[in-house]
Amino acid sequence: MREWRQYSLYLAWLVALLALCGSLYFSEVAGFVPCKLCWVQRIFMYPLALILGIASYRGDRGIIAYTLPMSVLGGSVSLFHYLEQKVPGFASVAPCTQGVPCSSDYINWLGFITIPLLALVAFVMISILLWFGRERIE
Image 1 (tube, rainbow, N blue to C red):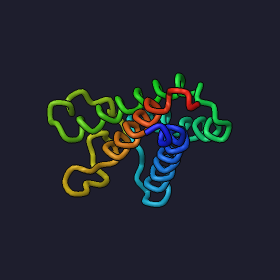
Image 2 (spheres, rainbow, N blue to C red; image 1 turned 135 degrees about the vertical axis):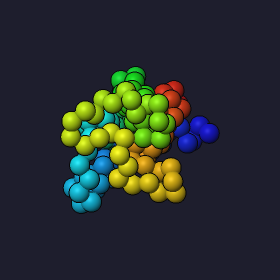
Image 3 (tube, rainbow, N blue to C red; image 1 turned 90 degrees about the horizontal axis):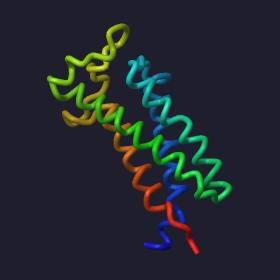
Image 4 (cartoon, rainbow, N blue to C red; image 1 turned 180 degrees about the vertical axis):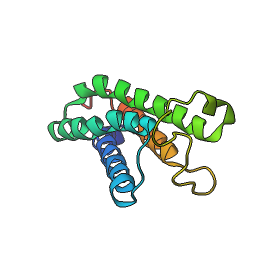
């Protein structure tokens, strides 16, 4: 387990980079217009890709104290967004009153995999990797 922890920062960066590329693919190539909650999730994910990339290059584990809360907050927004799409009671909260509705599904793979769920999985993976990588490797 100890050998795995030394790569946790790098793996967290790869997950954030993959999420960033997936987000850009859905909006720029597939033509899906992001809703307000999607933009909030991007606000948390995009800096993670940059900050974790620099931290992994420098081997700076001190950045975990700053990036872990960003990942948890982004995951919370993703969870709320997913619940709004799949649980009828959450749709009444309606943070997206203009433009693209947050409750719409651009993708719905296997009946439950949506873009907010993909973002939630990425945020959870990043959070777990950062949590396990927070100890010093000696």
